[in-house]
Length: 571
Ligand SMILES: NC(=O)c1ccc[n+]([C@@H]2O[C@H](COP(=O)([O-])OP(=O)(O)OC[C@H]3O[C@@H](n4cnc5c(N)ncnc54)[C@H](O)[C@@H]3O)[C@@H](O)[C@H]2O)c1
Image 1 (cartoon, rainbow, N blue to C red):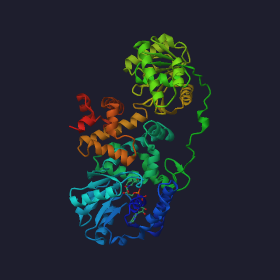
Image 2: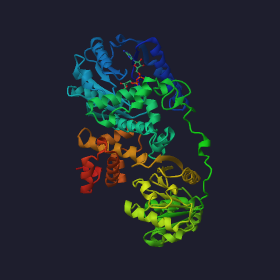
Image 3: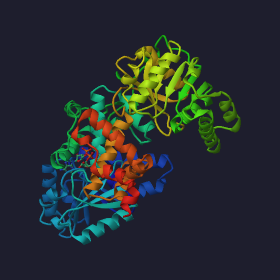
Image 4: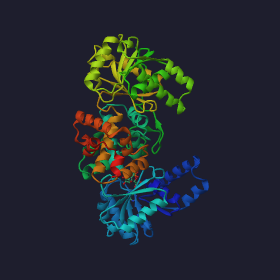
């Protein structure tokens, strides 16, 4: 972080004294800066002359004494309160009386650090995000004693650096980390419980949610030691929220020296310490693992339902060359209209041409009775019904479908095993959860129950691969992988809003500009609907009884009042 922050200042014309603890550490820092600026030059983002001018602005020094004449100090030493307090006490002695002292801490109390000096009114948090030269956000943390003019100066500086400063109070994890680390920690928990593999977990969040990195790859970038300290501090000083209690695996990896990219090994293995290049290791999946004998050929696909998901699925399967039998509750006409609209939209958005659309439509048979699924090789239920109605539907499918057919639900909300046990062939029943929007997102969660056969799973994966989709195989649990990680994070954001710590826009900015998320939590909640979020969160809480997963009261209130977060913010 120190090297990244040096780069941000020097790039924007500010002279920097870069201080490390030893000549070796200083050489490492200088090498990090050189690597980063050389990469920027190679990518055409920085002219060679500007890189040289940038380096000329940096004075590399060992020891804090070199900071005696600076206007501002940004501290970025390891995340330990005793160390930071010691350094701030020393800086207070060394620096000019008017120098502003800032900490880049991610989770420690800025107030606790400030009171180690004789100038707590001149101490602020200046929390940059990793990688500092790229991420636009800076959280400016004001304590109860920080002077208003100091905050104003630091805000102006952020603008000069081309950053968006969001000013907030001193609370463990501030905005972004308080929301990010609960999610990262939960992801490690899913991995530790072998609920999902390393690669599948990361694919879930990049391909299923559009996040820039998967949680395990991100933890390797942050550093497991830093992540552990951040979680531990947030847990102890942030109200002992169990979502922040570090998952035991993180501690074990830190003890074993598996700190992530910086040591060349973390959740993944890298070609050398400090490198971003992942190399195969003992956990890397092999192609042979996909080779399961006994997969069934799927030519005809039945799609049951008349909502958006059903229409999208019929469009996707037909466009990929399958014969499709679409059974809609409101008869052939209603279903056909929705599928046609989906395929028309694909043409408008250049995802396929008009000939492809017409060929796809010609492959669809519109039906209004389940009996017409007698020849299907795969049936996907997408009725969005309640459990009892869907169980009854699976019992009917069991009667009308030929033996060996794969029976799937597109739901992520119903326990698949309950549907499987409504049939006489539970080995052939699984979940196929296409992440929304179905025609766009490339990920399908293949949900296996304790009774699903390996052949059925392999067939499902082969069918999805032929659609050009990536699959991940996961256990039959509330929220599967994507929703189980996404919705609790959204719920955490609602709790933060409810606590009055930050507003809708600041929280959305923190996640888009600080973490590179495509959408902020409130924009996303409004898009999926607070009612949907509440239903998923309730299911997660019901299954786990984890207090940290209890739906936020504000979410419940907005659903009851029929309002969205944007309207609530504009009151
Ligand atoms: N890693 C992230 O993604 C991230 C993001 C935002 C903020 N932060 C915060 O930034 C700070 C640093 O984190 P990091 O990941 O860069 O840690 P790091 O361990 O990679 O770097 C810390 C550096 O501080 C140096 N150091 C230790 N004692 C020193 C001293 N007495 N004087 C001068 N230098 C000293 C070390 O040599 C090391 O190079 C922490 O407070 C962390 O919470 C980290």
